[in-house]
Length: 108
Length: 114
Image 1 (spheres, rainbow over the protein chains, first blue to last red):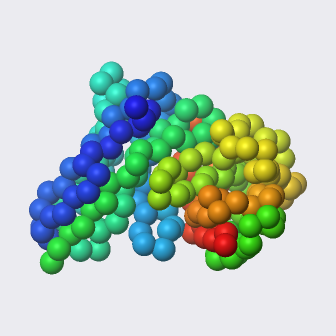
Image 2: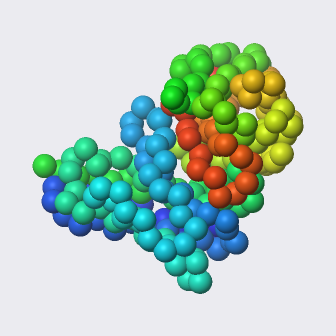
């Protein structure tokens, strides 16, 4: 069993829909990242969380430390949100352990 | 402020050769981490350098090595390349080496071994 599990692995939705991607982890962490990867490979850090909730534009990330669970929400989804979203946890220092990613496709 | 720069972006090598990849972190960042991404294994941690010292190492064979220079630029080297080393290699820089500091990723180097 992976230390970081994401669901779903693939998600297709229509433009405007509310999107939720879930991440569960089984290890102690100091922080959790949500990352976005577009075709071409580059990774952008969307959020770093150690507690509570963060919001940036149409993106919202929450974390429940007791339940070892985090969610990434996208409101009013748009085709440009199509990407792979990756949950990663900090296991001490700068070692990141990654989920397998969620491939999101938003159709116009 | 310039982002994390990885060179080269693309590389094709033959089995048995060795390769060196470079990562220039954001100015002022002293921690550089390296990751390998393959379709089968996803993203995996290779190693982390902070102030020219390797602080943490992932579960990779000794053919994978790295170093960091006094200006925080880092290189990773893979010797005796195997077909399975074909991957996207990403580096990330952070201001410190603690576990709650944001990491900034480069665009990656796509290595193909033939």
